Image 1: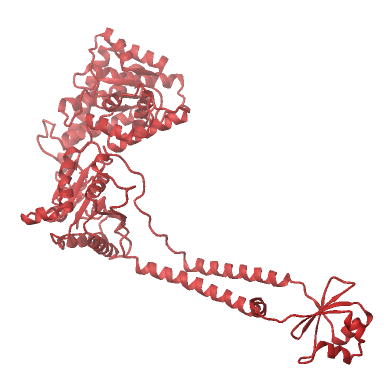
Image 2: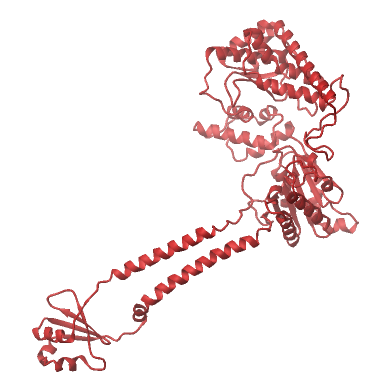
Length: 636
């Protein structure tokens, strides 16, 4: 119903590595740097050192060409070699004076180039100190790296109880969502506009003595856009949005959830005006003390802290808590009392007009062909949520891209409807001739019973091409969107579900595993008629089970409100409904046997029958035409 956002609202900080891994990493870096330094030191060419007397002899022989004096060190160059030698002179005595003491003639000394270089500057000191400083620097780096990692691990322990909420700030234009980005949910948006008005102008409410609700609970089926609506409220009001899931509060350590709740509310109060959004609040907000849903002390402490924080709000704090759930029946009554989540906004599945508007939103950046009619797609998708419609448009784009086309056609959208409902075609799943015939009669049995019974939805498409886990399927669409269904419609739906079962038994005298899903769906519907909807004359207007089947009025899962005798009567009533439905389906298929054969034969030939071709087949056999109605899939 609402535009789906896949982009992450925030990124959690990465956790530091373990202590063992940190030590090993530091040791590896230290050994690597030490090895590199050793290679650099060893790569220097070591020069041969000679005595002064040998130097005097070489000068006398005339093989010395140059002497460079650096302090007490002499670098000697020879005419017959490219490798220099080194020597040491006497400290405080000049080189010429020393050589004269060895009786070197003056003409020999004058033939040698003598160069004096004063040792000073950075490189002089670096070359002398490097052998001592570099190892010390390596050790210092190793210690710093190790302590830094250990400190990070220690800080992680201190931040264990901090909130993990993702924050969207008002000036973040890329992630901002407004009501313009949301189609449908008109009543929900009207309810939430009061919240927006309070956040923008709280003085107007406070001056007259009004207090805006502290908590807003968004209730609706999965995919209807509860999270997106909460973000739109923050976007419209221009306030900070703190988002967190209910499961993120609970850890294996008792007290962490409560600590994170306190930290989250403190952050929101400091950033006020702000909105705190808790998604899937039933993860921590279930009824306390019943053991349902894996209840434990940690979850209950977290819930208690949420209740305390919401009670601690002052009317001028301008912090509103919003939460979302698709299971409001399991929430603790303390959460729903006035002063906490006292404003409840129900978000229904979109109707036909809403679905068309949602499709237009998702079609903004998609190139369409001229034959695309979103109104037709909206009519063929009753019961689809906003998330389903997003998936439909995305699958259509994928199909077009896979076939190397630059635009989306109506055919792509039609195919994507079936793909979202049933899954992709299993073209590699080839049926044998016998299996193909059985599947054809099975689906034809569904279709003929649906067309013959007055309260069943009309058939829109029949196919024996495998999709998902189904060997074939019969698609029905209602005339208009329905909010309620009658007992007569339920009985016809159950008979239609058994049409394939009866057709297999009647034509082949045997049964396959094909009707297994039909039996499960129809039996569950018959039991709901008896235990939930009061549609059994024998049992009367009594609800034996709640709609959720888990927690009802604070009672646990295992508790039954009826005796074993009543349970046996419920089973007998369900069996009677199923037997009557089988009898009606059998009578219908016997009456229209020729139509059944015609439809099955055509399915074997073409594998798929659209509504127009199907209606042309059944009209000559006395079956009246119906218009299309709400999606109802019967799987083979």
